[in-house]
Length: 300
Ligand SMILES: Nc1ncnc2c1ncn2[C@@H]1O[C@H](COP(=O)(O)OP(=O)(O)OP(=O)(O)O)[C@@H](O)[C@H]1O
Image (cartoon, rainbow, N blue to C red; front, side, top):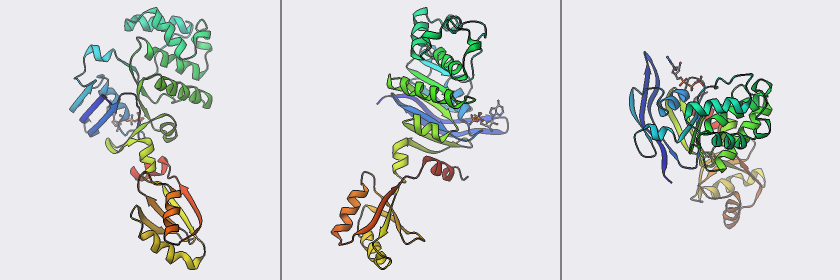
C-alpha cells in the first residue's frame, strides 16, 4: 500500500508550550486513520500542520510521497472547523458558494449532495436542518472537487446521538468508496467503530500506533477455569509448557488468565491443554477494550 501521508519527526512549539514532540505517522491509502487523544494532546495541531495551515517548528510532511504542493492540496478535503453556512440559503446554494471558492463545478455539488444523502433536501434552507444534516452538509463541502483524502477534526463533536450515528455511517460509507480518511477524535468508541488504524497521542507524543484490530488483539486475554481447585497447579504447569502462551496470571477467584501469541485461538489452547491431559471447566476470551488500553497508555 502506498503512503498517502507521512509525518516525520514533527515538533511544534507555541511559545513555551510544546504541542508536538517528534511525531512520526504514516497513513496508507484506503485506511481510516484515527488520531486519538485527550483534549490538548496535539490532534488539531497535527492536522493543521499536515494541511499546511500551521507551520511546524521542525519535521517534514509528505503527501503522496512528496513535499506538499497546491496540486496535492487539491487532492485533500478538510474539515477543521465548522464552515460558516448561510442560514437562509439552501443546502445547494451554500455548496455552490463553497464550490466557487474552491474552483469546483456544479456537477461536483450534485455529487456531494448525493454522497451525503441530502439530494432530496437540497432546496431547503440550512437553518431548518437537524444537527446531523448540518454536519453532513459540512462533509459535503469537503467532497467538492472529489478529493481522494479527507481530513476531519472531531467530526461528531457537538452532535446529538442521531447526528453522531448519521455522521459515523457517512464516514464509513466514504471509506468504502475508497477515500482515505484521517480523523481526529477524543472518543475511543468512535475510533473503534469507524477506524482501521489508530495513533494514540498524549501531550504531543505518540504512545501507540497500528491497526485497531491488532492493537486490540495483542492484549486480549483468555480466562481459564480449572475443573477443580485441586487441578489449578496442574493447569498452570501445562500452560507453562505451551510456548505460545505467555503472562500466566492466577486470579483471586481461582481462575488463570493468559495471553496467546498472535493468530492463536482459545480453541487451539483447549486442544493443546487436552494434549497435556488437562481439561478445563471454562475458557473464555476477554477482550481488553481499546479504552482500557488507552487509559493505561495515557496513564489515566
Ligand atoms: N494557538 C495556540 N497558541 C498557544 N497554544 C496552543 C495553540 N493551539 C494549541 N495550543 C496548545 O497546544 C497543545 C495541543 O493543542 P491541540 O489543539 O493541538 O490539541 P487537541 O488534541 O486537538 O485538543 P482539542 O481537542 O482540545 O483541540 C495544547 O496544550 C494547547 O493548549
